[in-house]
Every structure is written in structure tokens, then in C-alpha cells.
Image (cartoon, rainbow, N blue to C red; front, side, top):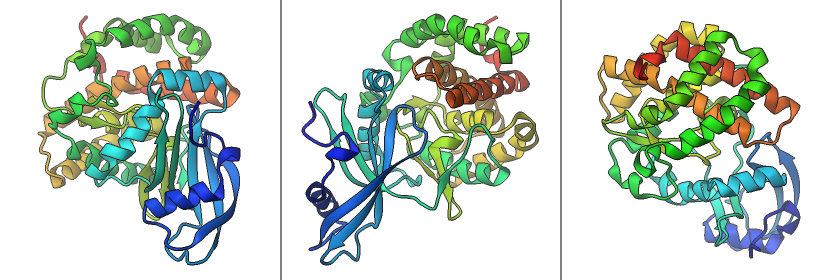
Length: 356
């Protein structure tokens, strides 16, 4: 059992005072009380907004903050902790967030249990910024805010071999040649098609089956410099406001291509007709952003990695649906996402990068 709060009811004013003082956000004042409200649609963890009251000096203290806690849903909680999601996120904010100029929330406090199954994050409240919607699809303006942030992350860790030694960064090519992912996909795909096949055409299902057979090849093919990818860089994990996109939900960071997050965002968060109209220009701009951050890719290499890593969306969507507790909104979201990702793969001929 954790020796720190893991539910909103367990939080108290004295502990919040300590976290804020230790992080340098509260001087001599004290938190005298707070109200909480559950927010968001997260599947792997629960988010709670705390509205704080103070006594004494509190000019630099936040009026509100976000507490991120283990999922109340037992199934989601078990899946998240078993997959290392809670550990991954806490360690990202502790060790890696300070190393990139990508906009992420400030952290006022973090805790992690010894067995890595319980955690607590107290973070900057980005309101009035709001998450996008994978059901609606991202606007051009949202895409133009999101992609420069992905470029900042990719550039910060490009060619940095130190991340390969971190146990909170996933790297199938390093760890097991993709064996675990392949086994999970081969087990999950038939049930996934049973659940969502009614919304997929024959070409989509055929592409998905081909990818599942060749997942090992996909995750081990890239031989050039790798970088840190968010892994689930989609509209609902971004907060849009004040002309910036802030990236949250760091539970699946991995070592991958510099185009992984950009391709995943455009493939899964943007409606296909808009993606087709925008992708060439947006990826050209993304390449310029990378160059501005110190990473130079040729136009051909950038476009080919964008095409190839369209397939990342299949992996994340199939496994995400498999390990989440079903509900009506989630089912609609996962169906929308797999339709978009498979359409993306077919549109850009990602199959070229897999064996026949």
C-alpha cells in the first residue's frame, strides 16, 4: 500500500502545502482547504482539478492544480501498472521533461510506490486550454500548434543513445526485437476485428493483418538515429489554448523515429480528407522545425519516415482498445482512430516498408 494519497479523498491541505513549498511555488503561506472535481476522459489514470484556498502569503502559489491518480477502474488500473504506465509517466516528468523545450505542465510534486503500481502527480493546471477530440478531428490550427511541439521533442533527443538505457523508455528493437508486441498483437487482432470489423473495409482488414504478421520487421527496421517519441501523441493528449499545445499523458514514451509522433497525430487525429489536403505542407513545415531545432533530414528521408511510421497508429490503437475497459465513447473513438490510421497507411503506401 502506498504511503501517499492515491485518491482525491486522501489528499489533505498539509500535504499540498508541503509539495508546493518544496517545489518553490509557495512561500510562508499555507493551503487551508480545497475542492476537487474529476475532469477529462483518461483511460489509464484519473485527473482531478483542485481549487485551493490559502492563508498567509500565497502570491506565487497556483489557484488551481491538477492531481493525476491511478485509475479508479480496477481493470484499467491493473493494465496500466502491469505495463509500467505509471512508472513511465512519473519518470518522464522527473528525468526527461527538463531536457526538452516541448511545452509540458510544470510539476509541483510526484510520488511512486516501490512496486510501481501507485503514483501521484500534482501538475500545473493549463485551463482555459482544453484537450482536442479524436472523435471530431483536429482542425488545421490545432495541427499547426501540435506539430512544432512534436518537432521540439524529437530534436531534443535525436541520436541520444542515453535514452536506450532507461527502463521507462520502451524500445522493442532494443529489448526483444518486437517479440512481445508481436505476441500481443497476434492474440489481440482477431478479437479487435470482431469488435470493430463492421466499420472496416476489406482493404483495411487486409492491411492490418499484414502489419500484425510483420510487426517485428516494423519495429527493428530503422537503422539510423532514433529519438524519444511520446507514443500516443493525439488530440486528446494535447491541451490547446493561448496559441500553444501542451502535451500530457506520458505513459507510453518510446525510442523511435523522429517522424513517429507527427505521423501518428496526422493519421489518427485528423479526418482523412483534411489530412490528405494538408499533410505534404505540414510535413514540409515539420522538417523546417526540426532543422530550426538542430536536426537536418532530407526531404525524401523525412517523407519516407512519415509514410513508414503511419503504421505506429495500428499498434497503439489495437493494443489500446484491447487493454481498456469497453464503453460507448471509447468504442467510437477506437473505431474512428483505426479507420483513420489504416486509411493513412493505405494512402501513403506504408506497405512498401514491410516484406511481401
